[in-house]
Picture 1 (tube, rainbow, N blue to C red):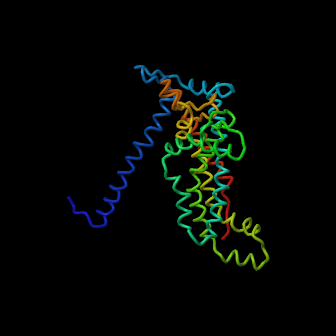
Picture 2 (tube, rainbow, N blue to C red; picture 1 turned 90 degrees about the vertical axis):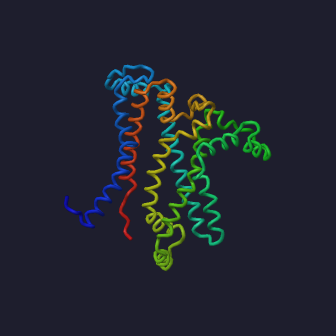
Picture 3 (cartoon, one colour; picture 1 turned 60 degrees about the vertical axis):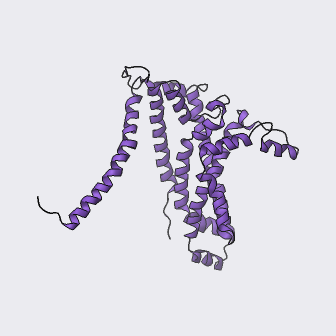
Length: 302
């Protein structure tokens, strides 16, 4: 057997180290994804031995339920899109405002950054249960505060009209730290010479923000918009922990597609139907992501 040169041995070691994470990725990510496509085309009851092929029957049932406004599937998709429409813009706007303020201060910067970032690294389950206590109708601290200033009690999670917004507010609050850090990194990359040149030309603060800050933050905005949209489309932990018995209530007013998948698969044992919902959500996320990248991404001249 011919002796390998040092260069070839390094290449072989490089391929060996690349192969290990590749096998792990294929086993953990790709195989379950392909399995979901297969299961979605079958009547897959985990308690039954036979898994008969039913073709597109599960998908047909989903589309039939989407047309029925009283079905859980219809509510799950509507609620998921509402979470995205309410949460993603609110999170980006608030995070950008906070990042602009943090970029201007020079004292206690580390403290403020840590204060905003700590909720992001905290467990979603822990955050959900703390806010569930804060939202309590009678003795919750928020209602105690409202009563102290003469305002009436609010039902929050107990009301079909307020529950979705209450949960979305918690998710926005918890994700602020990550968005702020990304915006701060983007702000610090903007050359100060652009602002100096604009001031010499007589531009005010609003014009600097519109014609310099926003265009130069385009990459950060696109990145966060895509990432946060995907995050809201996959909402699960907050809803199951903040609603009574993880039902997505009251009256399915907070149920999401992922929670509906979980309940269909592991409570009703309809794995074929749950997998079809998963595949459909995957396609929705893929389409929205592609559209966002095409609409938001535009050329910036430096």
